[in-house]
Amino acid sequence: MKPRGILLAGNWKMNHGPASARGFFEGLPFSKKPGATMRVYPSFLTLQAALDAVKANGQEIEIGAQNFHAEKSGAFTGEVSGPMLEEIGIQQVLLGHSERRQYFAETPAVILKKTLSALHQGFEVLLCIGETLEERNSGQTISVLTHQLESTLADPTCAEAFGKTLHLAYEPVWAIGTGVTASPAQAQETHASLRALLTRTLGQSTADAVQILYGGSVTPANFAELLACPDIDGGLVGGASLKPDSFGALWNLI
Ligand code: PGA
Image (cartoon, rainbow, N blue to C red; front, side, top):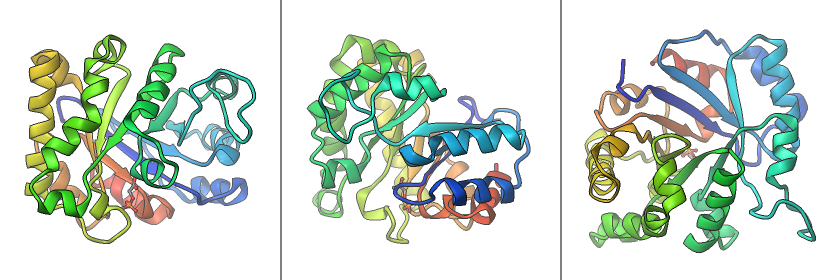
C-alpha cells in the first residue's frame, strides 16, 4: 500500500450529461480497495445525477465539481458557488486545470482566490499545475511549476491545508489529451522536485502528506508503471475516465 493512499480521479470535462452518467456508473465495475479512493468530476449539470447514481448502485465513489466561483452568491451570470455545491452534497473541487488557465484566463491570482474560498468553505481542493512543451524544452519546468504554486505556498490558509484538504495534480500540458504521456522517469523526477519544494517551504511532514497525482494521457497501458513511482500518488484522468471499461481497468491496476 502507498503511504499516502492512492486517488484515481476522472475529469470528465464537458462530457456526459445526466443520462449518460447514469449509464456510466451502471456499467462501471467497482469494488472497494483499501487505501484507494475513486473520484469523478462531472459537469455541474451532471453532479446530481452522478451523486444519485453512485448512491443507488452502492458505489463508494466521490463526486466533485470541475470549477467553482470564489464568491458565495451574487451577480455572476453563468457561475456556480460553493453554497450551491454544498447544498447538493459536493465536498470536492478541481481547480487550476490548464484548460481553465488557457481558455478561461484563470491566472495564479484567480486560482488562489478560488482555492482560498473553497478551503474556507470546507471543500477539499485538487489543484492542477503543469508546464507547456515549450517550457519543458527550454528547461523551465520547475520554475514554471514553482511560479504556479508560489502564491499558494506563501498563503497561511493554504499552507495549513496542504496534505489535509489541499492536494496537487501535476499535468504537463503537452501530455493532456495528446496520447503522449510523460515517461514514468520524467513524471517521477518532476513529482520529486515538487515534493522537495513542498518540503523546503512547508516542512517534511506536510510534504509527506500531500498527494501528488499525475495527469496527462493516463491509460490502462501506462498507469501501473506511473503508480510504481514513489512520488506518484494516483492519476487524474481525462479521456480514459469517460468509458466504464477503461476507468474500471485503471481501478483494477491499483
Ligand atoms: P487526458 O486528460 O487524460 O485526456 O490527457 C487529463 C486531464 O486533463 O485531466
